[in-house]
Image 1 (cartoon, helix red, strand yellow):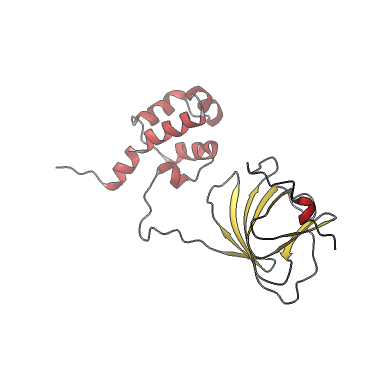
Image 2 (cartoon, rainbow, N blue to C red):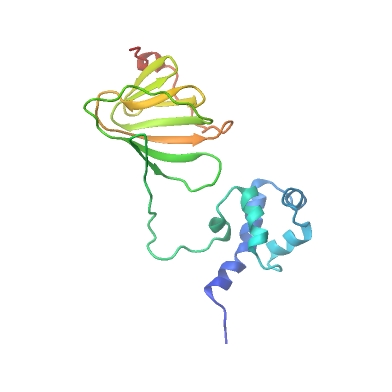
Length: 203
């Protein structure tokens, strides 16, 4: 009689998944052993299925590979298959996270509500690098001494250590896509530069 469970199938699939991720990253077993502190023989047995995965072994691998633990294990999500996004509210704006990775570049949909009398810009700084793309509405981007207006379809990228502020250019609602990474992590998308002179409106 077969006494296997769904959990057994999930655990059996961990080894091949770990091997595929390591090879995709171009990392050798010896290199992985050196960075995780787990012996090369243990890692080899883990990938071949001879060693049962445990939290003690998987946590350092999740950190090295920069993936959530549940993605590393590949456990099936039960219940509703739809992704339930949890909006966040900050500075009067709504942020909808579109990515779940613990590191690297994070994606957000940002919504600036309509305001008949837009507030005066309050410039802020923080570590990181940001790329944005306007989906709907007209965005006002104050970046240092520059005051820009971006209509739908235009993009901008900037170092967030430079004082900046985002708001509505005309009081209407604005929707935009934002990619944000820590210092040194940039989105590999370049904004067009030949339109910058047209987009810059000094106020």
